[in-house]
Length: 423
Image: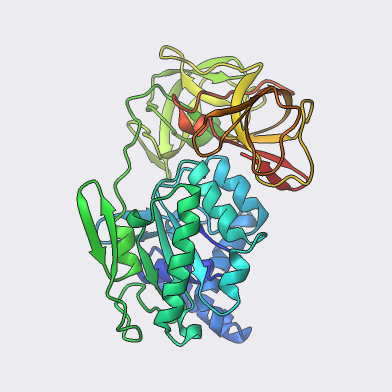
């Protein structure tokens, strides 16, 4: 996932990677370049590619997801969300969230960096969210180095400042590669820059020892491979449910844990529907089994499109099936709320693909955000910056799980007044 303040160059940088190592065919690129030039947007070439993809995606033209992929020598990388403003946070939490690594793009220009990490800049919020949502690997790209005249002093100043704030959040700066780049000119993106001879390369500590490299691509290539929870029971939150002529009902979603295959008898919670899986497919090809991380569609017997919906969770009826939660207890961190939150507060919860109003029924205790130690029993209210254990009651049936058992189903965002109030 690519994060950072508005205008830090996320689209240009991501566009550049997808452009140079990615799944966009030459014809499409030429078409985009011609359009960009005609509209006088030549300088936005790479960002323009992404904007076109995003616009087409938003208009419901199914874009081949391959466009959001690129390859490094070791990995096939999928870019989860080239973030816009507000929706990004919601998307990040609701399950497009499980990135293996976050790339934080920081604008190096005078004044730009300061704006991004100021009180209301998005740099901190994005980094805090990534950490809170379980993303443990981070790469920091310091962009627009061309506008600083490739200044080593400016780069070092930013590295120092960013190291200190990501450390406060919980990341270990020693395991985070820092790379000075120009997403527009391509410096240190795929090839080592001639403009910054002072940059001796990034390094990061890992369990397997130190890793080093020069470019952003190499830093991406040095991400630790994630472990996939395929041995756990199946959990698959539905993103959409389609009715397809001649086939029937086809729920679609991402396998978070376990696996799904034809012949399995599955249960949908909280809808309380049980049925057999007839077939599983991904990108229009039949799969023998869908594994964690796979975005699959599967055909089910004798279930109407009206019976199940986005936000339902599919599980194996014979192996710890998912159940409805009438209430649950959660640890909540208040990010930005103008006043005080007390019992009775009823915002909207975004958890995996579900979007449901929930009441803070009881504030059980206030805890220290760093250590998790209890600070106060039954506080009267909580405010921005506080962390608390809260008893939550959803306004209609929903399915959540303990974070320790099924992390993707135990994370949520609390949204109110068009912003993320808490996680």
